[in-house]
Image (cartoon, rainbow, N blue to C red; front, side):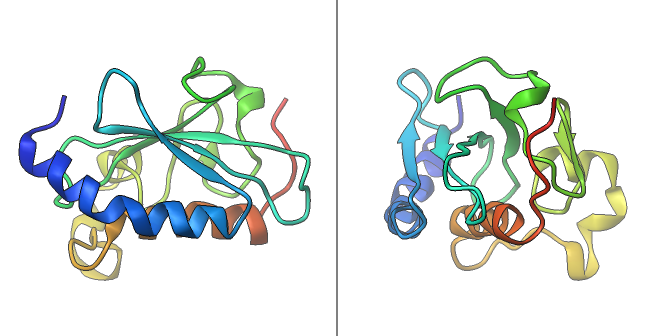
Amino acid sequence: MADAETLLNLAADEAAVVEFLAGHDGRLQADTEDPSIYWLDMRPRSAPRERYYPRLAWQSYPHAPASVLFAEEIAGRLGIACAWPQIPGYRAPNDICKPFTAEGYALHSEWAVGPDAWPVEGNPFLWVVETLQYGLDNEYGGRYG
C-alpha cells in the first residue's frame, strides 16, 4: 500500500477524475482493499457498447506514474488479452508502452527528462485518465482477441 501523502494527494484529485469520467459515460471506483488502486469503467466514443476496465495502481502520487493494466471487469483478473483495447503502444496483456504509465517509464529511462518527463504539477491522475480516454476516442482499433 502507498504512503499517507500519496493517499491524501489521490483523494484531493479524485473529484476531477470522477467528473471527467461521468462526462464520458465512465466511472471511477476505489479498490476495496487498497486505497492506492483505482478501477475505471470506460468506453470508446465510436463503440459505446464496448467497456474497458483499466486498473491504476499508484505507489507515489503525484511523484511517479501509476501502473496501468486492463482487467476483464472492475476488480477482475488482469493479464487477459481480450480485456485490452487495440491502441498503438498498448501491448496486451502486458503493458502500455507510452509515457504515462509506470511500465512505460520502466522500459524507457530516456523518458525521465525532456518532453516525456512525468508531470508532477496540476492533476496527474486526471491527465492519465484523459490520456486513456483520448486513446479510446481517437486511436481505438477494436478489442484484442
